[in-house]
Picture 1 (cartoon, rainbow over the protein chains, first blue to last red):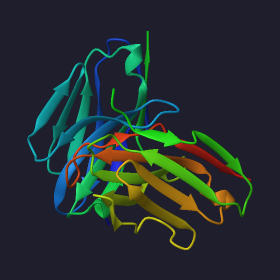
Picture 2: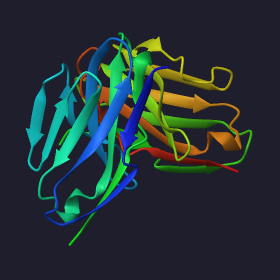
Picture 3: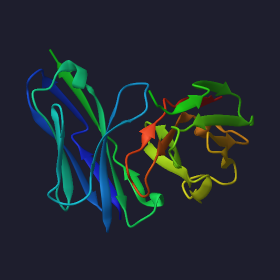
Picture 4: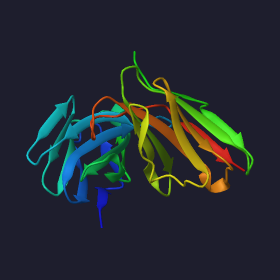
Length: 111
Length: 114
């Protein structure tokens, strides 16, 4: 069964404490993996697209990596403003009807 | 500052009533998506359009939901009749490239059906 699983469900960090969020997937024919950030009461905000294993992308304190089975979102020296829910989504085997979002990781960064 | 707009932002209605949600995609984007988000199911893709043509609506309950794009600046999602289980936040997103490129989400319409 095609699945996208994010872990942990929730993560609490102290400001400056680096960590990683995981998005694992079991799909055939991966076309792309997306990371989004969602703040309460708002729509998801696009962060990264990764297309092939070994690819990495960075933006400020965030770095996304991709392997054949999972993706990591590394957060370096997080700040309280990084607190949000981080969603990953997988697009596979062509067509948007094959787009699955994970349940998300709720990140709280405390000063 | 280009962004996707959605109206209304909040809607409370009684079961059986018709609900229409509207979305204005980012100018120049040719692909529009409708999503539904609930605590239980997370974010689900309902339907999407490219160049105003519906490409897939397999995620949408077709007996009561319909989605249209009457012109390039307007997409609509209609529920008739509405049911309490339709209560959710409905997001519209737009994108400019085929197949899974970045999507830009609107602020959502929070629908409550009593």
